[in-house]
Length: 159
Image (tube, rainbow, N blue to C red; front, side):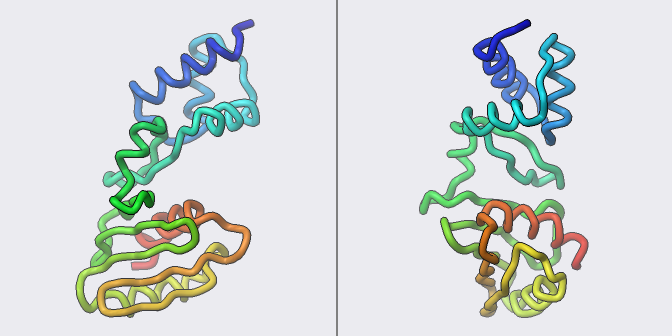
């Protein structure tokens, strides 16, 4: 049986060398390397290692190491998300610790905010739209990261 230190080292190597998009995929990679790990243990390892899951420009998600995750942050230190697929009018999705800002092309914000509201995401309490910016207000109990992931998943389906 391999120990936690070895498992952490292998997780780091896998995440740095491959595009891993789910815990199930990572579990399979660990099993190929001789580790018998439960999903709960893997989840704790990922949290301890501060490995983050980010939306890619190609329309999927991938796990990244904390140093790479830091490079995805904007000047204010907020995670910066790109919609999971090209969505007409959406430029970016950014998070603060409390709110989410969706940047759009000029004139698109109102109709995109309407579609977000109509999608009735459980993570979203509501939106406020200007000309090219949407303020998304998360529902209590959801992190801004969870809301941003839900938006990334819902936007392609909504438009």
